[in-house]
Figure 1 (cartoon, one colour):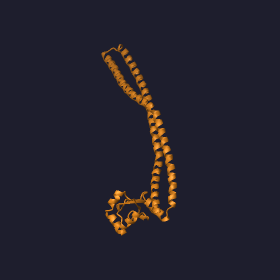
Figure 2 (cartoon, helix red, strand yellow):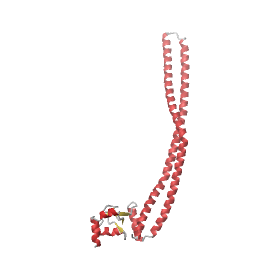
Figure 3 (tube, one colour):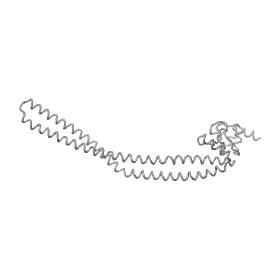
Length: 257
């Protein structure tokens, strides 16, 4: 294989791996922030429930105090029953007492609702307390793992960048310019394998003469359609035998004769 062709193939592999590592390195801080945000949300929800439970307990105390006030009024009204002088006044007082008793039932219903909510909050708080330390430990362990992974990725990328710098010095200015130009224009893919007579980058079929020359891997050729640098990988023995009867193989045989 032509030395520069071998070098650009390796350079393409290095650039792909460097791009993967860079994307992962850039993404890891966001993943760590997401973990920390999830923990903070868990803690915030836990604290919110505690505040709601405290508010619930105060509301129940206030409602119980309201019942005591109403009961005091009812007691007063009942004492006044013995002082009324007419049936009309008596009926009015009884109606007043019934209205106050209805208010007590309404308040008791509200207290029951508060008690049901309190039971739910207490259960959620107990569950959160039992999970909180575990959540903190999980987030700390995962954060440490991601930070270690990021450092490992940075070290590997630095090593590959150094190796890339060595490969670049082994290329002629023309081949390096071609590689960089095509790589930028083709989303990082400057090379394409030739398979079954076609460029796998754009699926355009090569002219027979170009295909035969590319198959030797003895020079740097560009696809006439997409400009990618072309290279050929010899297929396994079984596939090579099948290819021997293909039109491309016939064209190659004619070209060699």
